[in-house]
Amino acid sequence: MLDTRTSDAAKFLYHSPGYQLIGIIPDYAFPTVGKLADISFMYKKIT
Image (cartoon, rainbow, N blue to C red; front, side, top):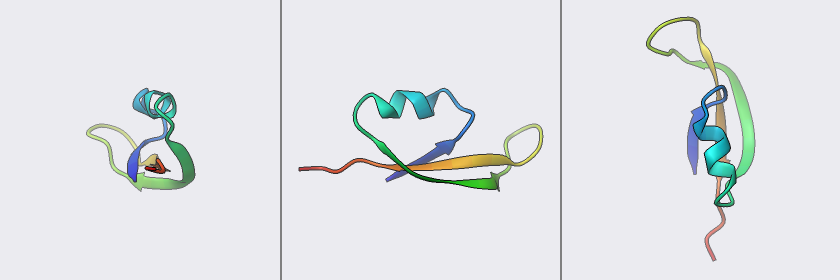
């Protein structure tokens, strides 16, 4: 399982190797500059 800010480009990179979105928590993380950011939690099933 991993998390990334919803607005980050990394979120889209994680979809390509098979990570699935679990959910989004609004206003969870405080970035370096600006207001609170939404966080996307993702997982990948390992077989």
